[in-house]
Amino acid sequence: MQRKDFLKTSTLVLAGGVVTPYWACSPKKPQIEEIQAEIRKNWAGNYTYQAKNLYEPNTVEEVQELVKKLDKQKALGSKHCFNNIADSPENQISTRNLNKVIRIDEVQKTVTVEAGARYGDFAEELDAKGFALANLASLPHITVAGACATATHGSGVKNGNLATQVLAVELVTPSGELVNIDRTHEDFPAVVVGLGAFGIITKVTLAVKDSFQVRQNVYLNLSLDTLESNFDKIMSSGYSVSLFTDWTNKNISEVWVKSRMDENPMEFGDDFFGAKAATENPSHTWIISRKLL
Image (cartoon, rainbow, N blue to C red; front, side, top):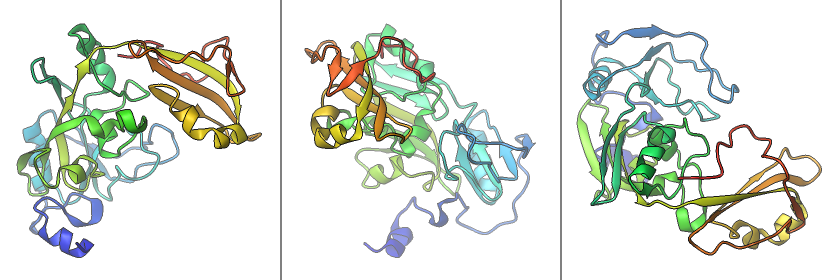
């Protein structure tokens, strides 16, 4: 299907990547408090948001009200994108206050959270009930909806990226309608990784599995030549493998190999393809624990 035809026929898609009402009307000021734009940057500090107004609704109904009354708007999560994907020429609607854990279904093995919930908000609660997500964001304060919408944090064929755990979403369409979409919907894959183009996601249901523990081994100074020659072996050596580099000296400064303890993890000793085992904690401050839920 041609792009122009898809935009015409899809019941959810809107053009331009910014939520815009289907019909023209004079925008009215919502009752939700408007926060005048101040200098706001993303988490990395490399991008300054240009949106004139910021709104922080407390309920899904308030999100619907805003979408109906404002002109152009975009959802804003935890501001972890390095680009302008969450920006808008006029308005941003933050999911900051939509952060509740709605339900943990122990029979269906699912967890439903509001869009602004962060992985660190419910990982421990899941573990306490004997469950876990197959894959977590590297930082506890990344919002679930934002991470899934950008298909971030891939962990290979076995785990996929964070979006692969999504079973259903609730979102506010450009007309302000509240809809629920699950894997039976033909547009589901596009909506889950929609980069904000389909509307504002308000709830997400994720698949969970039985809780497990992970061991992390850290190795230092892996040469790029060795990585290139042994890429498949290196990246498949654990449940998840992360590489960190500052692009100097043709060198990978740190390799993190995470292994599930219930899957007979591989043993590498002090040498991993020429990289040496770290004797201190990783230098990156965002590492939280060697036990992942």
